[in-house]
Image (tube, rainbow over all chains, first blue to last red; front, side):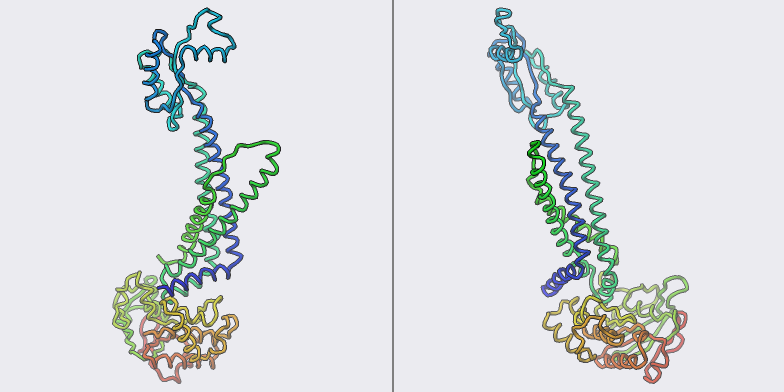
Length: 290
Length: 217
């Protein structure tokens, strides 16, 4: 068994050296596919990051009835705070409300009308999973049903619009990612199929000599794995060069707060191997008896 | 060793072999004769289970070929040595590697492979060209490699499909000598040919086919 395994492994490496050019073409194809895939993923992560950043500003503002005293208002504030979907909140008493009024209108309400008629209330941040118009609508509805609540509102129009834009873009990105992956699989498997086609007679002869499908497939799969690793290396090199170029050319002009996906290296290797394995299996399956 | 009992194996309704019965003993060399399209290759393909038997029974060393499961075909084929008219050598492997291939498929140890390949290489006269590639060999040498590859695993049965078809008469005779030597180890050898003058002096048994049916046995 070990003798056979060692033979098959050596065959895999010899196969690569025997067909250097097709193997290089296959690795480059995988590399280019991974670059496109990485850029799509990079855009997706950044878009997602920006949308999260934007959504972190989603808030619900609540104004209580003016007849509530401070203790009752605080109790009501705390009741809202523990509602499902609320992350944290900020209690606004009359004093704080007048400070906010001043910061918005640059006027002191006490000086204008001689007293502070502003209601107490609260500003609530929304938990991450609930930062969308549907959930926020649900939370606001629940708040409005509470006794002592005068007004509960959020920026419904903008949030619905943003939600729909983000959902559309992410949907398109996802569809593009899947399309790129499928195209890459077809491209890589066709390249590998070309390599295998050149060895069609060898495969037939091995069959006649009593080789099993797995015996024949093994070296091609190992070759595929090596090509996948090389492809991932090529992709990471190109991405590194692109990143350096972007830093060199764009950074002096515009500072883009781009998020670099933490697992890009791992994803490149995983997808490189996946592409190569699917490609090898698809490529060889045509030449093996069922 | 090879026993055909009313075997029918067809590609289409009228093409194939029909109701064939014959028996080849251990250590016997038998020629399979007939014109092109007579069904010689089909007989060989039926034996190595490349085409299925639609009727009758075929035994190889007592094993019913029709009952060999698809997944066991590779194991079954390892009992058979095959020699082809077009040699079927792997072009990017040396003579040594080509001969060693059946042993590597069986998972034989490196040392044993080395010993056996050198031994058989010497027997078939390939000692000097053992590290050459097929492209560096003559037709006769290529066929010797093909025979050595068939013999190296000491098979029970050797099937030779027109092994002299591409060779000149002198070399063809040498190839026949090698196949005859193979029977010494007890293997049954079935060789297809349409070259009657080549086999006539050998005074061996032959089976003649025409349109897939037995004519002479």
